[in-house]
Length: 281
Length: 313
Image (cartoon, rainbow over all chains, first blue to last red; front, side, top):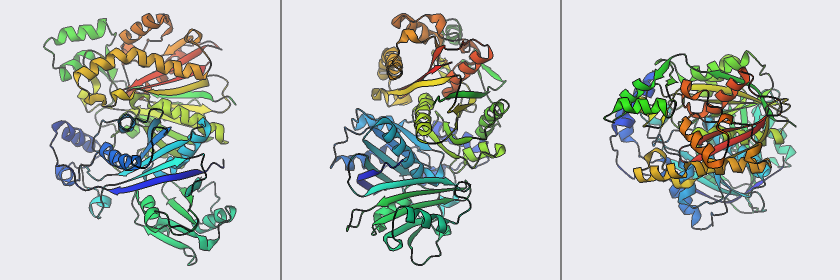
């Protein structure tokens, strides 16, 4: 399938603490019981410390900003991607946002249970959906929030802030930047190639010169080839950092967002072509 | 290409929670005895399955996959989707699907979760499965569904309406299915009810008023895709919320009540995302379906979502 998705616009936002913690016995009871089943210790201090940003608030901020420059009424699909849980444990956020922003013709769902691979999977699913249903516009909303009910070293030992990213995608225009390819390849499928060899093979298939490519991947997957420029991300299972790095650092004609998932034995890649001669972000 | 269901694995916990117990735990009504009587007599709701207190969700879903594996081979599965109604089910970084799939050697298959349509989420997955199989060489896709609220009695009972229990299903979709051919599926949204469980009494009343209309709109959407009418449907395999819902639907839309398969309502009640798959499994066990029968699987999610899929046996 050779469908490319133009990125009509995107927004990144880091959220501060916008409301104070309110003790809710039902929520506390829920977390306590849930964590107990999985031998984890509930500590309300961590809930109190968090920035208290719900997914619906985070989505609302991003879509409002997008709406200032775009009419969203013709959006066909809204996909939420996340790997941290919402602090509002019952809310169907996607439908709430569809209602709030009057996305009359949109359908939507969330991609979950995919860890840091979520943005890659979400883009793949969006491409397939748009192509199969002859739809035009989609919104991808990626959210990381860190108000959690227990201690998580990967979160609490690092300086992380609630962050969201939204992308307005169109499969019918030739606007750039555009997502030109999304790969979700199992280790078995690419036959034991190294990450470096795989990137090289794909790069050649797409006729991208080495000097025209920026690779954004995790620190543990640093490429040895000094000719390939890289931006390295901390080894965290989050959904926004690769897109944030693209906003902050993309300056070459092509960027590869790469997720080398050792545990699940998958290699995920999103190839983005920049607007010629311009720095994206 | 005949995309369809070629295997269903189910897990229904042996332990049952009786309507009396749930009403006593949760209801704030003064007359609990009459409430139980109403549940049983009017809605045909008697009990609902509940997993043991120390059973993690991965075990619940694993048991459905194990059941499926007794009947089919999964060696051509190319994608695994997991649909769930509850949004927070396991702690952050629990890696639920890895834990479910690793004992079967399926942990390195493409996989992701599909949610936010509450109990109608499996039907969003079915659409994605259809898209995926149409556009790739994939021969088999596995759809897992399962939620459990054994530890939260409040999430197991909606006053005077439904009992909610625990269960899991593993449904195998194949590209060359000879039975259970998927003709069409869709999801219908009514975004006026996006507050879900947070709606006030007035909104809940409005939701209830619009309930049948929404079910019908959802069904119509799927039938239109398949170029069929309601009359063409031999059986509705419903979400098992209660008998009253379907009796009202049948009266309102002139559909024969005996063609809505409600056998499981008294035994199981509603089990989040798994109802209509459990009904299909039951129909197949009892050889209730004949070759060529068309049946419609349907679920309604708070929010409000109606998911439905039309199949030909």
